[in-house]
Amino acid sequence: PSPLQVFVTEMLEVATDWMLPGTFLLVVAALGAYALRPSLGLTDVDMSNKTVLITDGASPRGVLHAEYLARCNAKVVLAASNITAATEAAQAITMRTGSSKVSAAELELELASVVSVVEFARWWEEKDEPLHVLVNNADYRGGSDPLVTADGLERIMQVNHLSQMLLTELLMPVLGRSSPSRVVHVVSEAHRRGRPHLDPKAIRGQEGTKGSKVNAYADAKLMQVMYSMKLARDTTSNITSHAVNPGTVSP
Image (cartoon, rainbow, N blue to C red; front, side, top):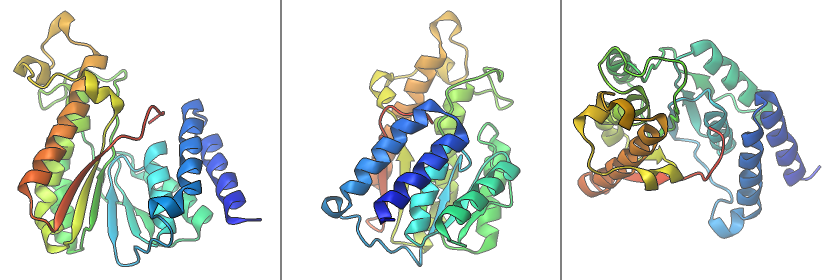
């Protein structure tokens, strides 16, 4: 079979495994990107000496990011609140790509907890391992969890933006030592509906009837975009910051 046929088959297996209809939209986007690889400059990308950390790495979108990076020979670490799920995802990626350089982080990363984020960053620092690419991939849209976390913060805002911003800042010394490096913020089209001037009550989940999961998600994604712009402005040229909108797909 041709490389394209192999790619199509494997991407459909990913979509089927996760049983998410929206994933098929992502497959279509991935196929389009594959077809356009020469014009996009993505042919023969070699990341053999690069280490990539992906937050929410066990999610369907995190898996697809990791799989592409594995095909580029990068060392990929999946960070997640569920280490078992991340380990299973890493093993599945290894089976599909043949790469032995994909693994789950040994310490859980719970983005709804400031303590967990600080401990994770400290753990990475103590590993004395480089970090060339940090992918802030979390995409939490609300569920049955309490609206406010134990830290007193609105959960959607904390998971999607505040904790990933904290992680980025804590890992900035490592990114600096590993430069040239980059931070990639996976955002959303929903950022266009976000409010650039937030009432502190929104961040603490105290807006009452004015607040909603949709508003909180849009606000968080806009904050990601704005933080990415700030990083691009303030950091050295050896650390670049990117905000990437994957389009309207399932997380």
